[in-house]
Length: 266
Image (spheres, rainbow, N blue to C red):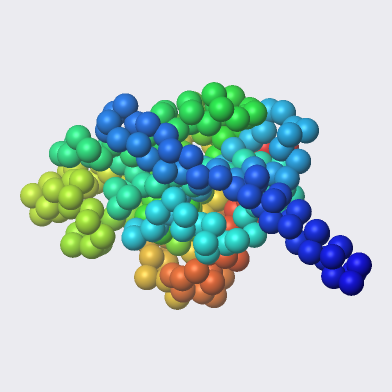
């Protein structure tokens, strides 16, 4: 009886710690005049820490702020292991751009400015690019590199897993035209909003990690990005392994990415 009671107490304490570690917060976006949900994951020893680095972790098309914690329930454990805060914003299906067409699509401004400011004001963060990274899967992989490359004053590291790093081969997919217009009529705009055309902006100090499964439908564009970065002598970690565009691959990949970022931070 005593043993059962002790196990019950341990279980309740474990649930309590988990609840304190993971929270959903709403952040107001002045640029879009809306409130946006975000999952914030803290290490178990958050109260005893200061100046903590933050990884902004972006979901894919069709996902939301809760997608990552559902796909990878071990994220709180990883946050504790590496001494980091993990923030998962809701990016809708907006590809983390500021749309030149739709004023309600300003998720580049939201993540890189408004959300970062909120997190820095409300949590014990390292308020410098050396303490910030951004990455994600699929659409969020595009977003991780897009935001990291274009906002190197904010993020010191960035990444992508299974990322849509070149949108141009997919002109009719995933609501991209809602933000950029039809591809045939706006080829220059599509060129200007695809990651592979942003490489000239990369500074040597930006830490970059990219991975993609060999059975992924984005594998060829990731290979192309990797080759182009080699041609331009851009330092980066590039990983391929057997795997498709699915949760099993992302569950594995995020552990490598968080290890990469922790080594950058510390």
